[in-house]
Length: 144
View 1 (cartoon, rainbow, N blue to C red):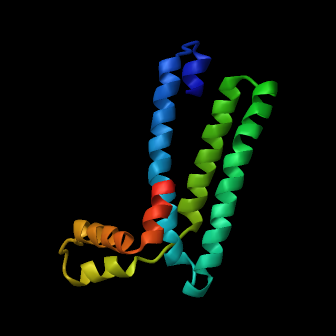
View 2: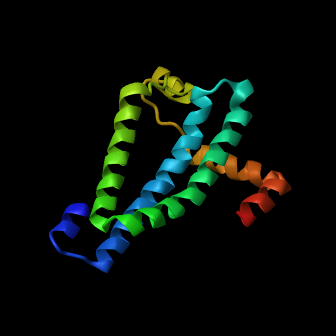
View 3: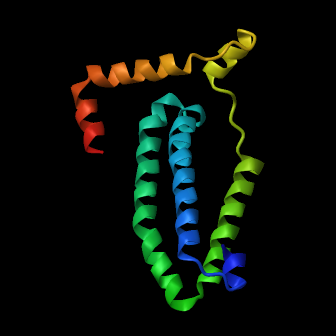
């Protein structure tokens, strides 16, 4: 986007397309973070770490538009796009370089079965059944 805008091609539909791609990325990223935390955090600390992670995400959701507005008042949109690109690249490099997570127990079990597929849809149905059996979860997820 930064390069396209620097070349003078300012397009509202292009901004919407990039926003949609970013939203899709977030839809993948947030559940992935939630799924990987139990592999990184001891069981006894998991509730506390999930709470801290939720608080950080909420604070970022609140602060990001404020910071964006501040940056827009001092910088051109092209520079802001470059800041976004550099910070994303830095985050990816840090994760790739320093984050090493051992395989999940279910993945190890699949390897032991010599490549038999994990019953994904069975797991998903089991999750839906669990939610259905707990009225609080049904109400909580319906309101979310």
